[in-house]
Image 1 (spheres, rainbow, N blue to C red):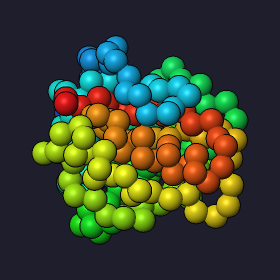
Image 2: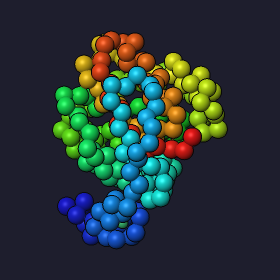
Image 3: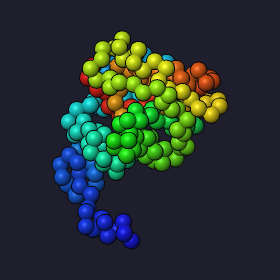
Image 4: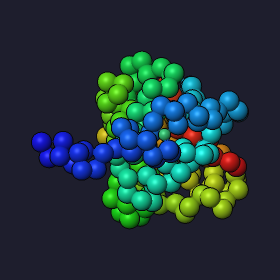
Length: 203
Ligand SMILES: [Zn+2]
Protein backbone atom coordinates (compact mmCIF):
# COMPACT_ATOMS: atom_id res chain seq x y z
CA UNK A 1 0.00 0.00 0.00
CA UNK A 2 2.82 2.41 0.90
CA UNK A 3 4.48 1.61 -2.39
CA UNK A 4 1.29 2.52 -4.25
CA UNK A 5 0.95 5.75 -2.31
CA UNK A 6 4.62 6.53 -3.02
CA UNK A 7 4.03 5.89 -6.73
CA UNK A 8 1.06 8.27 -6.68
CA UNK A 9 3.06 11.00 -4.97
CA UNK A 10 6.30 10.41 -6.87
CA UNK A 11 5.49 8.71 -10.19
CA UNK A 12 8.40 7.20 -12.16
CA UNK A 13 9.85 9.55 -14.70
CA UNK A 14 12.20 8.73 -17.58
CA UNK A 15 15.78 9.73 -16.81
CA UNK A 16 16.28 10.74 -20.46
CA UNK A 17 13.17 12.68 -21.51
CA UNK A 18 11.11 13.14 -18.36
CA UNK A 19 8.15 11.12 -19.66
CA UNK A 20 6.10 9.61 -16.82
CA UNK A 21 5.60 5.85 -16.37
CA UNK A 22 9.10 4.33 -16.40
CA UNK A 23 12.62 5.21 -15.27
CA UNK A 24 14.02 4.68 -18.78
CA UNK A 25 11.33 4.86 -21.47
CA UNK A 26 11.20 2.76 -24.67
CA UNK A 27 11.75 5.86 -26.86
CA UNK A 28 15.02 6.65 -25.05
CA UNK A 29 16.07 2.97 -25.08
CA UNK A 30 15.52 2.85 -28.87
CA UNK A 31 17.88 5.81 -29.23
CA UNK A 32 20.78 4.22 -27.32
CA UNK A 33 23.84 3.54 -29.45
CA UNK A 34 24.46 -0.21 -29.73
CA UNK A 35 28.05 -1.37 -29.38
CA UNK A 36 29.55 -3.09 -32.38
CA UNK A 37 33.28 -2.64 -31.89
CA UNK A 38 36.11 -4.87 -30.75
CA UNK A 39 35.90 -7.07 -27.67
CA UNK A 40 38.76 -7.13 -25.15
CA UNK A 41 40.83 -10.29 -24.80
CA UNK A 42 40.36 -11.43 -21.23
CA UNK A 43 39.75 -15.19 -21.09
CA UNK A 44 35.97 -15.01 -21.54
CA UNK A 45 34.15 -17.74 -23.48
CA UNK A 46 31.63 -15.17 -24.74
CA UNK A 47 31.64 -11.44 -24.36
CA UNK A 48 28.65 -9.16 -24.87
CA UNK A 49 28.81 -5.39 -24.66
CA UNK A 50 25.35 -3.96 -25.16
CA UNK A 51 25.78 -0.23 -25.70
CA UNK A 52 28.24 2.61 -26.14
CA UNK A 53 28.88 4.64 -22.97
CA UNK A 54 27.25 7.84 -24.23
CA UNK A 55 24.14 10.00 -24.07
CA UNK A 56 21.27 9.01 -21.78
CA UNK A 57 22.95 5.74 -20.78
CA UNK A 58 26.14 7.51 -19.70
CA UNK A 59 24.26 10.02 -17.56
CA UNK A 60 22.06 7.24 -16.10
CA UNK A 61 25.13 5.17 -15.13
CA UNK A 62 26.73 8.26 -13.53
CA UNK A 63 23.56 8.98 -11.56
CA UNK A 64 23.45 5.37 -10.29
CA UNK A 65 27.13 5.62 -9.38
CA UNK A 66 27.15 8.97 -7.63
CA UNK A 67 23.59 10.06 -6.81
CA UNK A 68 22.20 7.01 -4.94
CA UNK A 69 19.54 6.13 -7.49
CA UNK A 70 19.35 2.43 -6.80
CA UNK A 71 16.04 1.94 -8.62
CA UNK A 72 17.49 3.44 -11.79
CA UNK A 73 20.29 0.87 -11.42
CA UNK A 74 17.68 -1.90 -11.34
CA UNK A 75 16.03 -0.43 -14.45
CA UNK A 76 19.41 -0.55 -16.23
CA UNK A 77 19.79 -4.18 -15.10
CA UNK A 78 16.40 -5.01 -16.62
CA UNK A 79 17.50 -3.28 -19.82
CA UNK A 80 20.67 -5.39 -19.87
CA UNK A 81 18.67 -8.58 -19.23
CA UNK A 82 16.41 -7.75 -22.19
CA UNK A 83 19.36 -7.75 -24.63
CA UNK A 84 20.05 -10.78 -26.84
CA UNK A 85 22.62 -12.84 -24.94
CA UNK A 86 22.30 -16.41 -23.73
CA UNK A 87 22.21 -17.11 -20.00
CA UNK A 88 21.70 -20.90 -20.28
CA UNK A 89 22.39 -22.64 -16.97
CA UNK A 90 24.77 -19.94 -15.79
CA UNK A 91 24.94 -18.35 -12.38
CA UNK A 92 24.91 -14.53 -12.48
CA UNK A 93 27.95 -12.97 -10.77
CA UNK A 94 28.64 -9.23 -10.34
CA UNK A 95 32.19 -7.86 -10.47
CA UNK A 96 32.31 -6.16 -7.08
CA UNK A 97 33.24 -2.48 -6.89
CA UNK A 98 35.62 -0.90 -4.41
CA UNK A 99 34.40 -0.94 -0.80
CA UNK A 100 35.19 2.73 -0.31
CA UNK A 101 32.89 3.78 -3.13
CA UNK A 102 30.22 1.29 -2.00
CA UNK A 103 30.31 2.85 1.48
CA UNK A 104 29.85 6.34 0.02
CA UNK A 105 26.86 5.33 -2.05
CA UNK A 106 25.30 2.64 0.15
CA UNK A 107 25.23 -0.04 -2.55
CA UNK A 108 27.41 -1.62 -5.21
CA UNK A 109 26.04 -0.66 -8.63
CA UNK A 110 27.35 -3.86 -10.24
CA UNK A 111 25.44 -5.89 -7.62
CA UNK A 112 22.26 -3.88 -8.23
CA UNK A 113 22.63 -4.50 -11.99
CA UNK A 114 23.34 -8.21 -11.49
CA UNK A 115 20.39 -8.66 -9.10
CA UNK A 116 18.01 -7.19 -11.68
CA UNK A 117 19.55 -9.37 -14.42
CA UNK A 118 19.24 -12.52 -12.26
CA UNK A 119 15.60 -11.76 -11.40
CA UNK A 120 14.64 -10.91 -15.00
CA UNK A 121 16.40 -13.99 -16.40
CA UNK A 122 15.28 -16.31 -13.57
CA UNK A 123 18.87 -17.26 -12.80
CA UNK A 124 20.56 -17.60 -9.39
CA UNK A 125 22.88 -14.84 -8.21
CA UNK A 126 26.20 -15.48 -6.50
CA UNK A 127 28.41 -12.96 -4.74
CA UNK A 128 31.30 -15.36 -4.18
CA UNK A 129 33.59 -13.22 -6.31
CA UNK A 130 35.02 -10.74 -3.81
CA UNK A 131 37.53 -7.94 -3.84
CA UNK A 132 40.52 -8.86 -1.68
CA UNK A 133 42.57 -5.80 -2.48
CA UNK A 134 41.42 -2.23 -2.99
CA UNK A 135 42.57 -0.61 -6.19
CA UNK A 136 42.98 3.00 -7.19
CA UNK A 137 40.54 4.52 -9.68
CA UNK A 138 41.33 3.27 -13.18
CA UNK A 139 40.26 6.37 -15.11
CA UNK A 140 43.66 8.04 -15.38
CA UNK A 141 45.73 4.89 -15.92
CA UNK A 142 46.90 3.46 -19.22
CA UNK A 143 46.26 -0.15 -20.23
CA UNK A 144 49.42 -1.58 -18.65
CA UNK A 145 48.94 0.39 -15.43
CA UNK A 146 45.34 -0.81 -15.25
CA UNK A 147 46.45 -4.44 -15.55
CA UNK A 148 48.96 -3.96 -12.71
CA UNK A 149 46.40 -2.05 -10.64
CA UNK A 150 43.78 -4.82 -10.71
CA UNK A 151 46.06 -7.91 -10.76
CA UNK A 152 45.16 -10.10 -7.79
CA UNK A 153 42.33 -7.78 -6.75
CA UNK A 154 39.69 -10.55 -6.78
CA UNK A 155 39.17 -13.96 -5.20
CA UNK A 156 36.51 -16.64 -5.60
CA UNK A 157 35.30 -17.51 -2.10
CA UNK A 158 33.70 -20.71 -0.87
CA UNK A 159 34.89 -23.64 -2.94
CA UNK A 160 34.69 -24.57 -6.59
CA UNK A 161 32.90 -22.14 -8.95
CA UNK A 162 29.81 -23.32 -10.88
CA UNK A 163 30.46 -24.71 -14.36
CA UNK A 164 28.99 -21.63 -16.05
CA UNK A 165 29.06 -18.03 -14.92
CA UNK A 166 27.78 -14.82 -16.44
CA UNK A 167 29.89 -11.96 -15.11
CA UNK A 168 28.05 -8.64 -15.00
CA UNK A 169 29.56 -5.16 -14.99
CA UNK A 170 28.36 -1.68 -15.89
CA UNK A 171 31.30 -0.30 -17.88
CA UNK A 172 34.22 -1.97 -19.62
CA UNK A 173 37.08 0.17 -20.88
CA UNK A 174 40.24 -1.88 -21.46
CA UNK A 175 38.89 -5.13 -19.97
CA UNK A 176 41.68 -5.23 -17.35
CA UNK A 177 39.26 -5.53 -14.41
CA UNK A 178 37.28 -8.25 -16.15
CA UNK A 179 40.46 -10.17 -17.00
CA UNK A 180 41.50 -10.05 -13.32
CA UNK A 181 38.04 -11.28 -12.24
CA UNK A 182 38.13 -14.17 -14.73
CA UNK A 183 41.67 -15.12 -13.62
CA UNK A 184 40.43 -15.31 -10.01
CA UNK A 185 37.51 -17.57 -10.98
CA UNK A 186 39.72 -19.87 -13.08
CA UNK A 187 42.20 -20.02 -10.20
CA UNK A 188 39.40 -21.50 -8.03
CA UNK A 189 38.39 -24.14 -10.58
CA UNK A 190 37.38 -24.85 -14.19
CA UNK A 191 34.49 -22.69 -15.29
CA UNK A 192 33.10 -21.25 -18.51
CA UNK A 193 32.86 -17.52 -18.01
CA UNK A 194 30.59 -15.36 -20.13
CA UNK A 195 30.82 -11.60 -19.73
CA UNK A 196 27.88 -9.26 -20.16
CA UNK A 197 28.56 -5.54 -19.85
CA UNK A 198 26.14 -2.65 -20.17
CA UNK A 199 28.44 -0.13 -21.87
CA UNK A 200 31.83 0.26 -23.48
CA UNK A 201 33.74 3.29 -22.24
CA UNK A 202 36.26 5.25 -24.27
CA UNK A 203 39.87 4.18 -23.83
ZN1 LIG B 1 12.65 8.76 -22.23
